[in-house]
Image (cartoon, rainbow, N blue to C red; front, side):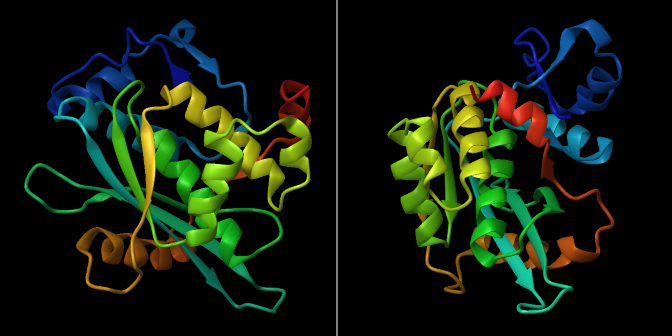
Length: 220
């Protein structure tokens, strides 16, 4: 389960000490986040590293997320996603990537990509997250920014993931904004996210999934 880190741990400005700081975090400084998304330790470290790296850069931060859906209509259908961020030199390195469990659809792949992007944003930092999915943009506005009730969430497609995003957005400090970008239009960040999302299927990482029991318990 991905842990959130207390503010005292996330005050590092220089990315050169990120690795040492992560390895030295005391166990009692980490608590499980109240929405239970599970993934592997490599992904956890990558997300913490990106948060610390971005904290050392000027706001607002810029991130691009994208989803990848393969083998549509087959038992082997799979969802992948990736997040990249704008570096100080204008390049777009990988922030994180992965796959997702559950019923596979292109929309769900994009939604989990948005969740990953929000998790990569430092707490209480302004950030712009770009997606080429209009349905994700509209869903975020209707279900997250509007602070939709549990009843409204339950009536929406992909309610479980939107519920997680709602909580992740609140924990981030509600300082991230979501923007639409035209797909395959030569936008460097979008192209980088698209390329990494396609590679996510063969990355060999544990698929992201929601711990239903814990998620339901914390949603009441």
